[in-house]
Length: 241
Image (cartoon, rainbow, N blue to C red; front, side, top):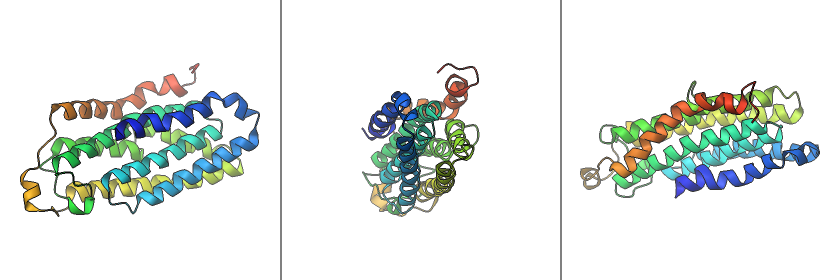
């Protein structure tokens, strides 16, 4: 349910409405200015909030809010195609992260506090691998899905030569740095550091069954390749999107 709400339904509604009403926003520069500023502040504040969260699902949820800020301020800067492109890309790696988090929670007796987990890298290798892929795509690691849209959003902000464009570009760069930090923190505390839970809990830890593992693998491939495959269709020079 979290994967559906955060990766698709909740994000899509508002952004899709803004992009569908792009003609109206182009004739209302004050409204576009407001959307840009609001999106930039959302990206920054949600990223700072994610820095201090200890619930594995809350960290990913606040990253959704932060990415929504990127998508909205891109639309405010008239980058509607890039906004939809990042929306599409975000759906894959954010669904991957939420299902991966669900796999961790399911495996370790419904524990969601990353301070009480740790040491899962050898016990849950598949889950660890897919969360690494999703986190790198979220960060915007080169040549993964998130890179192709997130980088263009920051380029549009920097190249707009407006006060609001430079403002949201600065906030976007800071939010990108914070995203890299809390994503790495999540991986380190959940998988890489020594185990920090009860012995009885770890005795029953197991990898996810096929109904969970199969969509994780599919979404992993999507988080690696979809951005590259679809970039020309969304934002290429010859596209009519």
